[in-house]
Length: 266
Image 1: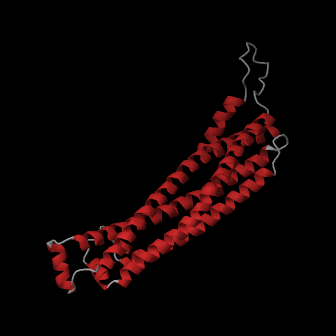
Image 2: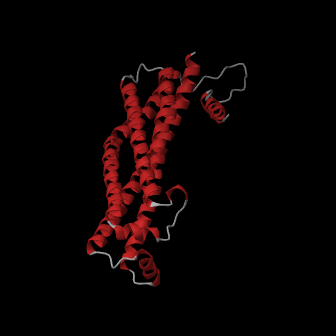
């Protein structure tokens, strides 16, 4: 319905631009022909292609980031497992979240699962980007038809933008579980540095002495690493969101111009 309304408005705009004549018998001429509409549609697809090429290095860095994030998660899991003191302290922390990530084992599993999902989403987005660019590069501005532009614009609107959104959502899933990891790590750090009643009671239950300096060092290193990854992750999410908004606008315009051109080419 919305698409039909947009097309109706566009047709009203482009369907007749000649000034109103006193005699209704004189037919109005369309202010744009199919060739002009195709040129406009091509221009907007060209903008999409240009941005995809510019984003190529950024997209490649996603793969590096995902692998680095896996290393951070592995180090986090090793930190919990390698220290009896730390693993026991975690049991007494007031964890600020619930549900399926209510303990560290499930949290690590969830994050690893999210990273796998992001890697798959990244591959799909890279493939759809490559397909778009390969198809666009075969087009010739002066001979391309409205049907060809429309077909590629529909692909971009459905497949390309869909894959980009899936990647964005996958990164947001990682952000959510990573934020939980950061909260736990900060809680561990606070507990190791605290001398309050809470920690003293935990020590009574655990039956352990003061943590070793090595434990404190591991926690600090993990906390700093997780926080650094969080900053990088949020930057990538913002980058995808901004790119998606720009691409969506150009793709929508290309679809409208090409669909109008197809009507005139019939």
